[in-house]
Amino acid sequence: MSTKAKTKPRPSRLAGRVAWISGATSGIGEATAELFAQEGAKVALIGRRLELGHKIAARINRRSPGAALALACDVSSESDVAQSIAATVAQFGRLDILVNNAGIVEVRDLHEYSEAQWDHVMAVNVKSMFFAFKHAFPHLRAARRGYVVNVGSISSFVGQARTPVYTTSKHAILGLTRSIALDYAAHGIRCNCVCPGITETPMLWEHLNVRPDPRAALNERLNRVAMGISLSPLDVAKSILYFSCEDSAGVTGTSLTVDCGYLTAAEWQCTGPTAFQQIPKKS
Ligand SMILES: NC(=O)c1ccc[n+]([C@@H]2O[C@H](COP(=O)([O-])OP(=O)(O)OC[C@H]3O[C@@H](n4cnc5c(N)ncnc54)[C@H](O)[C@@H]3O)[C@@H](O)[C@H]2O)c1
Image (cartoon, rainbow, N blue to C red; front, side):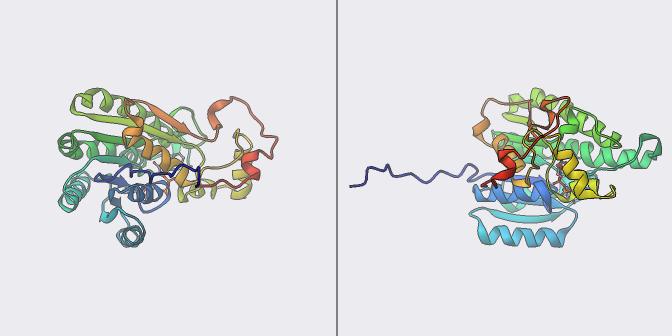
């Protein structure tokens, strides 16, 4: 007779839950939508590229126990955000989780910005979170347990060259996270912030492609990271999941830095190769 204990299948963390995820047509948002659906959630994929959203939703619906719906929405528009939240509730019957992930970066010096450019980055990265919370609140309250996860950055804590408005917006997200956590705990809502480091997504390449040799620029940056590697979108999605379920019970108003050790040192030169660089990670 085998002495091995039978392992019970792990219960899905998000069965019966509904999530609204912005910026879900690429990078971290897409990985979060997939992971949530694997955990049994119904997910609304919020983004401007509806066709792409439909393709991702079809893939999720084929492969996972959850369900997905793509909705067109520019998160800098209050009416778009309001409509997308109403459509999510109309389709899935409730709303439990808000993931404010959509974001943009502009690489230029501060004196080169026009007022409209400043306003646009702040609107997509921060004001969108106000719109989403405002329209999701009645539903999160009705769910009795509501989860809000805002995506910040290591730029929520330190400056990075030639991205002054992005850095300002990501610092602001920490303040907004704490305010929501304080003011809405009475309604059963927890609000936290995930702050990624160097993550291989289209946004990272947009940032690096302004350099003459983008790959060399990435390697140069990774030399300043303790683990010597970049993150995958799934690595970040796992922390977003943590804040979106009872694994993080009791945690609110805080931030989790997921950065392979980027912010652990003021000065650092990776002498590599690290074990993380040598052994491919398992997801
Ligand atoms: N990639 C990194 O290294 C990194 C590091 C720190 C923080 N982040 C943050 O992670 C989040 C996700 O970025 P990503 O790296 O996955 O990049 P990404 O470019 O793949 O994803 C950003 C998503 O936001 C969407 N978006 C942009 N403007 C929008 C708008 N007006 N309305 C609706 N959707 C809009 C984009 O279409 C895209 O799907 C962002 O908030 C970003 O600041 C990324």
